Length: 223
Image 1: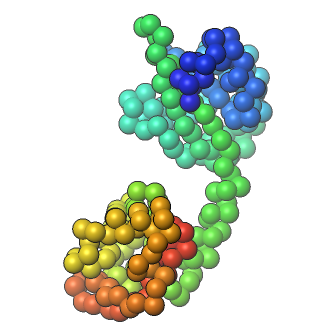
Image 2 (image 1 turned 180 degrees about the vertical axis):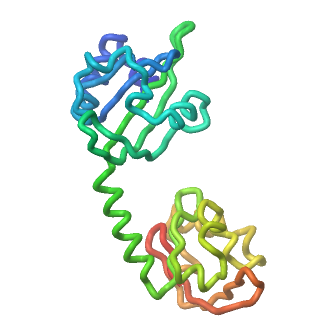
Image 3 (image 1 turned 120 degrees about the vertical axis):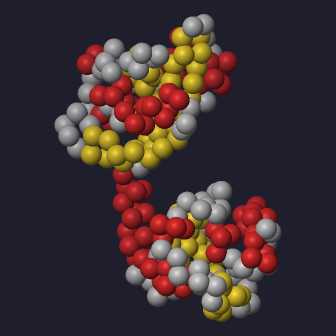
């Protein structure tokens, strides 16, 4: 994003665009010091930029997150932060790298997701208590939610499933094709299995088998 802005505008114009952005933006130099802090960042952290510019980025962002950003191990994270008055909030961070001669800066775009996070947690609490097995997956088909009923049905504790590709839960005979089935549904709406009235075999961790009828709701599956 920052590279695109810089290619369209002069440095001063690019800085003005970032300054007026509704999203909180801060730039971190190669010494991990804050070199830019826009008006939205002042409102989010409730602190004047005069007190922030030149200070360690770790004053605002967790050191573990900064290390991942600097090393390139991560470009996007959800983290819990605190403003200058000690109030906590959840934020989604996106980072981009800019190079200008020997200088390498990290620009971090910060969005307050506290309300979204609370809504998600309330939904998860409701789904956790559901009698149906409920599984949610992300855009990479990795499992992000696996409720108690799903644990009972498949025989896997959620710790073994969360973060794994959902194909681990489907019969081995169709496992190699499962990503293409899910991606086709995501891209075209065409769904040949989930949402139909077909009953499918569920292969449990202990190799025993059950029968289930899957249904879908965007990125969630119920059985």
